[in-house]
Every structure is written in structure tokens, then in C-alpha cells.
Image 1 (spheres, rainbow, N blue to C red):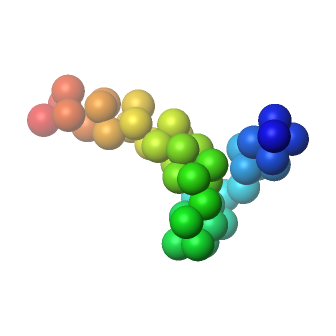
Image 2 (cartoon, one colour):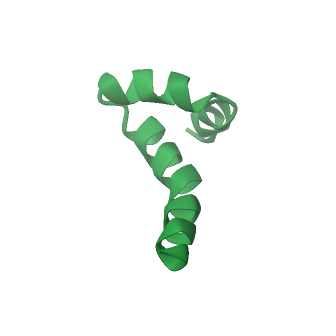
Length: 46
């Protein structure tokens, strides 16, 4: 399984979204990991 996660990490956000649309849990987790810090940063600024 770590091999799959490594592969997911090199995908673009657009590619991950395609996997998420097909119910890929690992792709969803990767998007959350990537975007959570950005979203929290915006919350602090607002």
C-alpha cells in the first residue's frame, strides 16, 4: 500500500480529483492533506 500512496503524492490536484470522483479514498485523503493548511491560513487572515 505505501507504493500507491507514493504514486498519489506525485499526481496533480486535477488528477486526484478524477480519482476522487471514482470514490478513491486515498486520493481524497491526499487532497485534504494538501489543502488543509491553505484553508486554515485563509481562516486566520479573514
